[in-house]
Length: 453
Image (cartoon, rainbow, N blue to C red; front, side, top):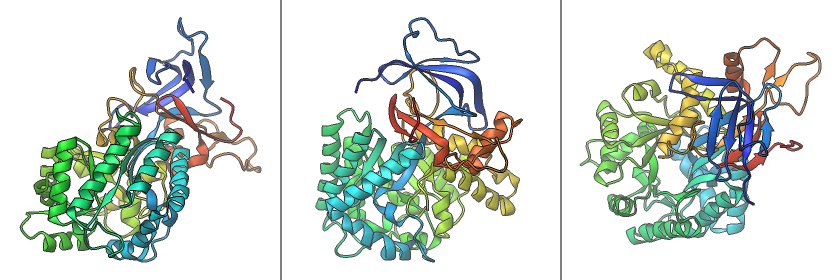
């Protein structure tokens, strides 16, 4: 269906910088038939010449338009296990919960059921861009790419590579298998989306312990050859870091393992980064690799508390990841508040300078994430020329203190709150019920039941 010129009228909010959220009350944003922002006006709801016949969409109640969230690290295949991790730490959790579930995706019916669900669920939470780990199966990975494209979600889709430290029934048989299977998934995305407008393939070594040096070196060559981005894990917990040191004794650090394989570049996304040393952070910055902070998962699996403010102060690029199913939710809004809470636990030992603010958490959820995935020129904020990747957020007004509207979201506005207060209430108490509509590149991809736009 072709897009039509649309003017979005009402309050719009986005991160102007790491420390500042810009609130434009009673403004208007015009989006052309190409899905890109054509104009941004503050303090006026007047429709410019040439746009008088355009479709008009207005915010509702105490509502506002906000950029779509960017999930820089999520395991789509693990969604059925969200919230299920027992008392496990990372390595036990993989063997107990993860590998048995992922291996079942050789059944495409099972894969389709899960992938359709997780894409729909992430969209309902306002996630317009997601970096997905799939499984080792080529058909199922390609199916995930197809589903994301059909549902209109911007996605990075990666076929997982691993040739050791996993069950015999679920691993790559050789270096050649890992590379050839990855090429097949890259070729599939190039066939369905040649310009990577919506779907991008991503080379995905699971993490250093599950990949031999030979597999990582071969994937590094593939990364350099194709220019396709790379995603993996790094320094998630102490036992894992000790294991990497044992498996790669010739490497100076975990980070150096990836660097020596040609996998540490400006197009590399490193999830977790909880226990990085000073030299490792300096190397990551030098290579311009990116960090996906996954606070809910790091807490759930007792992996540790990443020093995000330290990373930011050192000039590293950081976004947020849900890391389902190590993380319990695919909501980046929830992840933003988890990031704030984790930073406060860090501050209890490191001092108040470690605390993340609401403004900083929202930046990580949008502009920070856009930089992590290399799309900062296209998404993450409301500027002319950017794609209209956005969500409409609705906050409910309390009309009768004794009556609860079962259809409203949990954020309650009593009157008199400033916009700063409203945004804080949304971050700390909101959920997907407050996300009433979602657009990707100008196309409506999710709306609450009964909403008329």
